[in-house]
Image (tube, rainbow, N blue to C red; front, side):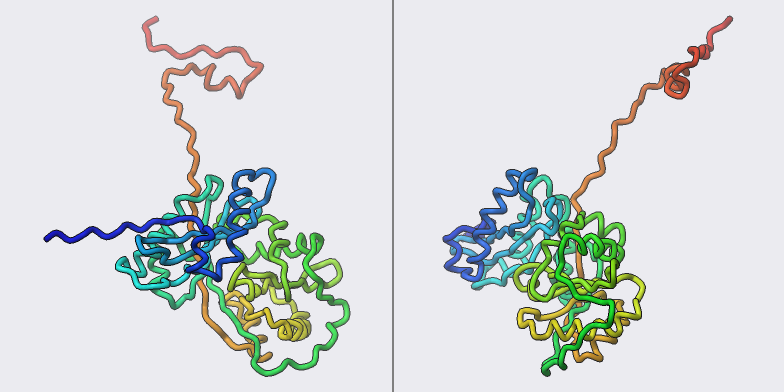
Length: 331
């Protein structure tokens, strides 16, 4: 008796029929429709809306993943953590996630040139799967959680310093600081513009300003679960004014119940010491991974071997007289 072949997995875009299995994706459904319109008219509409893809077998949906552009050009998208299996499957968790992610990576729009994803640094299985799919580690981060005790009363900031909501003016000043913490390969993958910082505004976000300069800023990390985590950005060199200003900024964040954590660079020792002194609790380490799909465009080589010196040097001597070409014939 021959064994029956397994029903192949398939991947579909999110539809209203899938909400019976994934009710938490109800808010993503409208964004999925908007994302399709944005991809049809990339020159008219900036890419902002998320998309969702579902892995299914013969018995129905198994898992889901939400993707979203991280820049208005739509050239780089982020993969959010795939939803776990809603029931047991003969295919196994790894097979389902691999099929789901691999399909999403290959059916993206032509303008999508790269992908990024954040995963816990200790999740060895997930990192191994992403490396199989072409992702490489880019940058480690440390997540901090607010203190469990009520914060101390918020005092005024030191003289000359202000905490401002993110706007077009201070976003341009924060932009060099945000780019200064990224190496060239990471900047090439994310392909961001200073206008993309405006899309990361939210509760608790802001910029620490001293006169006409920006010292630091807090931006929303992403959407969904990551929307409740802020990313702290500062200049490469530690400014002594941060020692007095940041404790007051952190106390402003604590009453914000929507702020679940703060993400900093893993090697930011001065910031880690300050957060520890303020009672913030160290959380998980995260690893930012990226996959670039850009292809180098190489011009076809000109294999013309019999070119006269006049043709070769013509552009260098546009007004000169034609040069005689050498000949090996007898004279």
